View 1 (tube, one colour):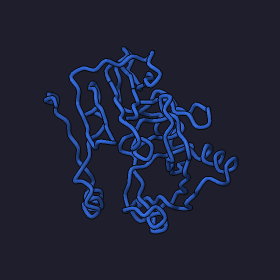
View 2 (cartoon, rainbow, N blue to C red):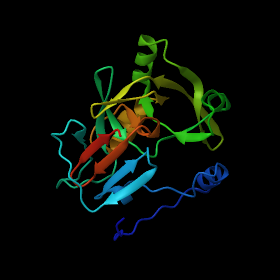
View 3 (cartoon, one colour):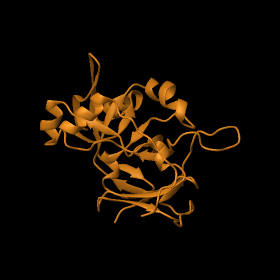
Length: 225
């Protein structure tokens, strides 16, 4: 909807292109530096993405919250990885807003979910995963459902289905999360974020909503139509 004036670059690894071309999903993806300094709406219900010239968001609205970015010494964002807060059973959990989060499903997970091999997902720290599993043995789990291949190594992570997630005061669900080690957030993502988060929220939860994110004014708003 608006001309992009600043250039951006993305050079995918050959194995990435081959994998996703086989899935007939895409030939690449946009990254954090394209989204920074702009205002976007991701309308999952209508399957639309809008780039706004301006938008009227206010963090006094119950569906809108402030987001955080890692900044340089004079207060300018260095990276486009926004932190925000979601709730599960009334507990605040700091998360990465990650529209690109995805699962690479095992055969078992694909059959269980009646799905293609790569779908939108969300991730959660192992400590939270264990807490959910212990407190709610009735929640669905797919062992080794999310598979990552790195060179000659293959890693399989368990997945858990959370019945209700609260985003900006709106309850949505069910939502699937794939477990990741706590260190992935406390030692990995912290390098590009303003705080240690407990996971990354993506399409498995956002698919229920329309989401507007104002990177420049650091605001995130959820809407359920």
